Length: 161
Image (cartoon, rainbow, N blue to C red; front, side):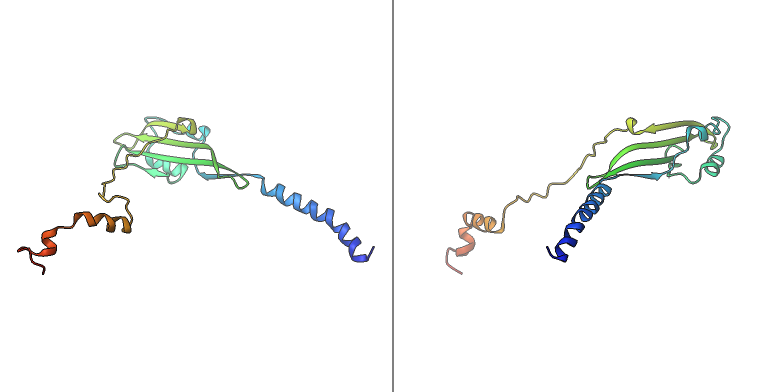
């Protein structure tokens, strides 16, 4: 046995161990967090009928969304995603805190929505039909042979142009 062959035999188990560790680390579950929602303990400081919109924003920071024109509410949202290997990410938790205000910008209601409260909203696609059939160029060309007007080919008086 030569010296290079014995070195190779010693390196194979080490390379195998490195390969197994690399594959195992690639399949580790990774958690990612996006956004911010106040905890229930934080929300105890918000008193319905007393806390103003400005004090809520100064306590929790700028909201995710502000629908002051529609229903005078602010929203804080957060999501947790779990990544595992090459699989697509899976949303494992979603929290949305909606704080509604009255006309004087005083808290009227505080609601927390979770992933279980969510629902799929079907969007209605209103697409105008273009009237074009899925026919190839050759199909359109061959289909036009039956629609030839003899008057257009021969002219109005029946003679060729």
